[in-house]
Image (cartoon, rainbow, N blue to C red):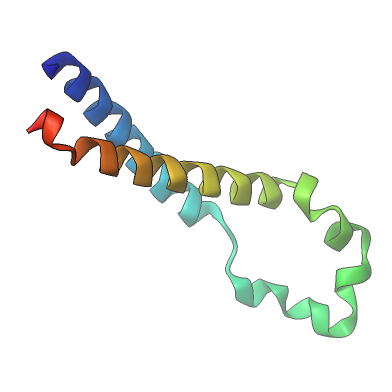
Length: 80
C-alpha cells in the first residue's frame, strides 16, 4: 500500500506543477476586449476550440479534475 501511495503522490506533484504552468501560459480575459468591435465573428473567434488557447483550456480542465480526484483519493483513511 505504501508503494501505491508513493506513486499517487508523485503523480499528484507532477499534476500540481503542470496545472500551475498551464494556468500561467493562458492569456487573461482582458485580451478578449476585441469582441466589442466584432472580432468574435472572425476566423480566430470561430475556431478558438482548435487553437492553442483552446487546447490550454481543455488541458486545464483535465488537470483540475485529476487534481481534485487525486486529492480526494490521497485523503482516504486507507492511506493513513
